Each structure stands twice: as C-alpha cells, then as structure tokens.
Length: 219
Image 1 (cartoon, helix red, strand yellow):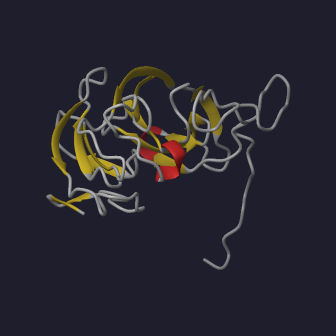
Image 2 (tube, rainbow, N blue to C red):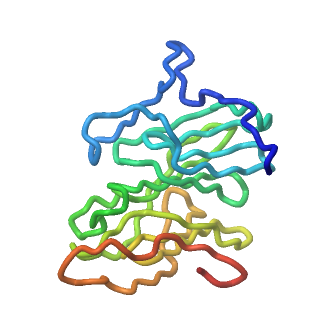
C-alpha cells in the first residue's frame, strides 16, 4: 500500500469541443437554484467484467469506459431537471440497467410527504445498450412520510435473484424499500420496513443510511 500512486488524472467532465474542464452542467430546477457545473462524483460503481463504471456526479450521471483502467473515458452522460444531487449508482446483475439515486437536499429534508413530487429524491432507472443510457422510469418509496421525517433516496444494494432485478435501498426515516425493477419502466415495491419517526413533533436527522443484502439477510 505504501507504494500506491496516482497514475493518471483524466478529465472525465471535459467538453471535448470547448476544452472546458467542467463541461457538464446540472439541469436541476429545484434544490440548488441556478444550474451548476459538474466537478465531482459522489459515488462511482465499477462493473469490471463488462468494462464499465457508472458515476453519480453531483449534477449528472455518467458512464465510463474502464477497459483501460488507468485511462477511463466518458462514453455517456445523462441529466434530469428533477434531480438535485446525483448521489449513487448501481448496475443490474446483467449490466443492462443502471439505477441512479437523487439525494435531494443532502438527505436533511422531509421529501417523502404526500404533497412532494414522486420524482424528487427518487431513483431514475436507465436502460444500458451499446454503452449508451436511455431513461426508462422513476421509483420512489410509495408510503408517504411525515414532516418530521427526513426522507430521500440513499444507499442500497442488489438482491441476487436469478432472472429478476431487485434492489434494497435505504430512505433515512422512510426506512428501507425493496424495489423490483425487472420492468425498468414500471418498478414496484415488493417489501419494506418503516420504523416510524424518531420524533413525531420535530425533524431530527436520522434513520436508515444504507441497506445491504448479504447471505439472505438485509443489514
């Protein structure tokens, strides 16, 4: 480990035409005010077997060709006016779909109320073909939460069921929700756990930060 070093610093957000380093821009129409340049990734998920990585990068979702690991290249980027902060990314088991989460407001706010749009702080599911992403549908946990419960899409993991695409995901005080996105355009909840608010009278930051399947259990 002591001999580890940086071998390259690729400009994966660069606009090839203008040379602008932060060449991608957020399309967010809420949460951040005016669109801001994309200059960092929150999470990057690598799928080594297919030579791709998916990055959730503040204002955009990106797809990287990592067939040459030391020299990754951006092969696609997606945007969404409903997304405030691209937080994490997950491939389906077969590598034909990517799920990006939107951590609206950094997870601090109550964004799962009955009057909140069901596309804010949600999941966006994209089909992946020929190294290009195409939008398929949204998923947001269906149970409305109270004003005192911070709730937004956060960390999750795949549940390995042959022939199906299933993901378990945390929603802070919204608990956890298990989503079947086999039909990418019509994802559905198939299981959930909701413990209720930490304090029903005031907003206290807390809840499930992550949810990981392992050997038949969810942690």
